[in-house]
Amino acid sequence: MGARAEIKRTGRKFDQVLEGARKVFMADGFERASVDDIARVAGVSKATLYSYFPDKALLFTEIARSECDRMAETARQNISIDAPIRDVLIAVATQISRLLLSDFSQRIFRICVAERDRFPELARAYYENGPEMGRKQLEQGFEEAIARGELRICDVSLAAEQFADLARSRLWLRAVLGVQTEFSDDEIKKVITGAVDTFLARYGVSPDR
Amino acid sequence: MGARAEIKRTGRKFDQVLEGARKVFMADGFERASVDDIARVAGVSKATLYSYFPDKALLFTEIARSECDRMAETARQNISIDAPIRDVLIAVATQISRLLLSDFSQRIFRICVAERDRFPELARAYYENGPEMGRKQLEQGFEEAIARGELRICDVSLAAEQFADLARSRLWLRAVLGVQTEFSDDEIKKVITGAVDTFLARYGVSPDR
DNA sequence: CCCATACTAAACCGGGCAGTTCAGTTGCAG
DNA sequence: CTGCAACTGAACTGCCCGGTTTAGTATGGG
Image 1: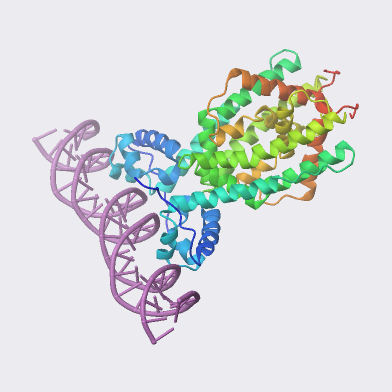
Image 2: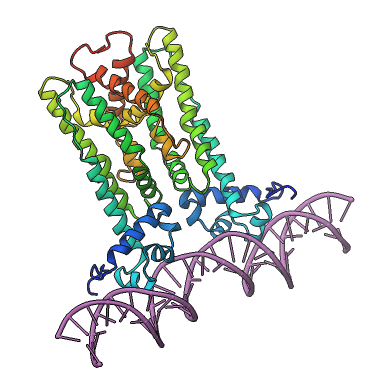
């Protein structure tokens, strides 16, 4: 029983394989993606692919986790502009909304949900690198705003969660189910201002409305 | 081109097949469920199964849609008790939260998301019979409360959506990803009161703080 | 008792796909 | 030029699974 199921990262075409696998897995998910497809898209022979990765599952987790990491970066964009709190919240909500409605984010989520039983650690990685990370960002921003006397929050963690949920109200679920695929700026704006208004009604410090 | 792909509902064991298929599909989803499995669980021969249903896909949609209908019923429970608006909202939020965290609801959602590309009309049926239905219920209740002067809402539809989203904050996503499977009454209660407080801060009519 | 209809069990077909093998090619290092 | 390591392409194995067929068994009405 030596080292189990290792990935050999040496080789000229390793990156091609990763790229091909990324494309195919993101488009088809784990089950529906075929290794022949991946090899073809990667411009690599199946034998070469299997010289890098011991099996399909490990190739998949490699891709999926790296995508989850990518997501962490997209989530890591704090915008603490010097502006009225309401404007800052609007900007942040817009960012959250756009991210959550993006094709990329949607695909990852759907794959994680679909494959949640087969790859439970994947769903966890998604959660921690995506929503959890975003929530922590928000918490931090809220803490600062509280220190500046712009917000009044007892349970910061819950407030962050509420804000994120409000920011995607009505849109995200429709998107993830494919009920609606395109969202006008107007729709988004309405949801976002609604979210910020509700949020500030509870946590705003001035009689904001 | 005569009648295409009909289901023969006559036969002693038709219901057994439905029941078996329901179990297996709900447990494994479409792809991972095997017809042999379904036949075995249903206590029926494969040939009998195929005498009722022309193929696996139609059997699946039959089950899935009927489950979506079942969901509509679970969603159709209005509780317009004569009580302070806050208590009513707490009760409603509790109901929403429990429903959305139930094993049943979670399974259906996951299946619809996983199979969304193969069966788009299924995801739509889910959306209309589940979330959409629930939202309409909420809207109606809100309208009445507005008429009674207990709430002040401009965009009732958005408010309903916000309420539902707030009621599942922090819990639902964790459940659907399998990050957390058990939820204490305490956790749920905290989220719910937080949701109602936030909601009332925005839409409550008295300075409900 | 007869017979039609429903059902069974098991073998079977065909196709798809993960993973392997192997004979041959390419390309680079010494 | 030589030799080695990476890579190719295509065939091949084995398995699973959807769907069909068939030969035979239960059931219930007339």
